[in-house]
Image (cartoon, rainbow, N blue to C red; front, side, top):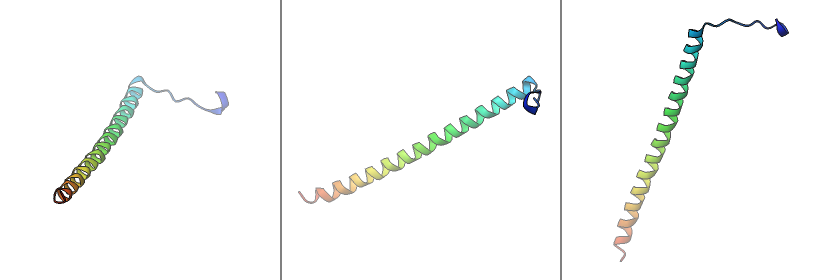
Amino acid sequence: MPCGKSLKKSFPNELDNQWISTNKEKRYNLNKKFLNGLEVSTFISIEFCFLYCVLAHAYSGMF
């Protein structure tokens, strides 16, 4: 045994399960990041539209 470390023998299905689990976790995290970004974009768009409407209404009475 090199360096006093023992190697644990894994069966192929254990490796597959770990790989699938890791991929599911990565997919979940990407989906979460995407939805958070979409939420922020939507919020900014709504705020911008609201501000535009308020300013347009305020300036329409001036001219």
